[in-house]
Structures are given as C-alpha cells and as structure tokens.
Length: 100
Image 1 (cartoon, rainbow, N blue to C red):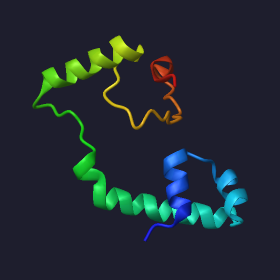
Image 2: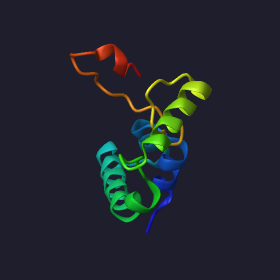
Image 3: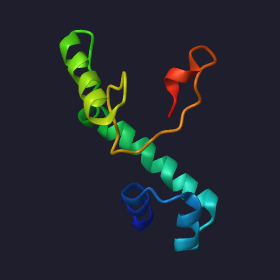
C-alpha cells in the first residue's frame, strides 16, 4: 500500500530534503521508500505504460522525432516522461549532442 509520502513525491517531484522536512522522516527512510515503490512500479507497469518505437516502424520514429523538434525544439528526441528533465552525463565523444 502506498502512503502519503509516495503520492507527494511522485505527484510533486519534491526533493528528498523537502520530504524529510515535511514528514519528519530520516532522508534514508524517504530514499528507501522511493526506491522500493519505484522498483515495484517498474515491475508492474513498465511494459504496459512505457513503449519505445521499434525498428519495425521507422516512419513512426521519424514522425515522433519531427514532432519533438517542431513543437519543442528538441532534436533527435523520441519521448518524454511527464515533462521532467533527467540530468545525464554526456559521453566524452560528441558530448554537445547530449546537452540537457
């Protein structure tokens, strides 16, 4: 069963520090709750709700990339998760194409 901490974290994107202060829990407890719930969401929901364009449908891939470029100015983008930016470390080679 989910409790209020998981709802708050996933609905608001609040930081662990904010969650710690809001609920009076140790940061390690908040972290453990988030990891446990995230793993369960992945196990239960990933295949049903997350899909990637496959090689069998190259036109769909092209249309998705064109849409992200046209509407958001994001070149070579194939998807987004609720508008959240995920910070990544770019590779050493061609690092400029991985700017977040």
